[in-house]
Image (tube, rainbow, N blue to C red; front, side, top):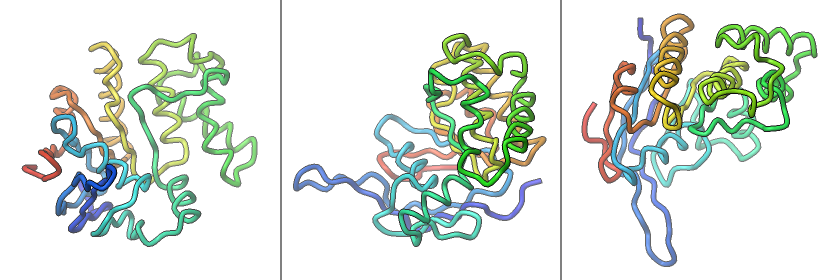
Length: 227
């Protein structure tokens, strides 16, 4: 069952400068994301989807308006506070996996835990648990080049959830996968929501991917057009 909002966005504006020109990207965006919700953001290229995702994740900053995640107004944090907040509260899933080629699957998943106070034994227990969850226990000693695209994305998901973040943000997570692998990844994300209560915000162009979401929101030229 969906809970109270974990993300609250109010009157958000964002623009970029190109020389002396100001390019509006997002205009007066307001909506909530409930705890345990799977949200898909859709829209044409240049509509502001990835910008909105980056703002929610604390990667970028708003021009005006507020974003509150888990009760924290992230725009009020200093750069150092924001970096610490991201490490503890946001799990990232990218289209092209962003795994480190010279590290094994196990070592890639362990990376976020190196910033915590966990002991080596505790880190290893966490990594083994999430690799089992994504069904990659038998591939933990393999480097990314030895894994299929779908397996690499499962490693990336394990890395995203190993710190038990408040929200998961996924930017076109199936965009580089064949249909079978994409379905496996979407089923895994669906399981994270339904079995573990994770909150996922996903940018996608793929209507099939969006079908897995509880809520689909559309952006057109920086304006939220429907939900």
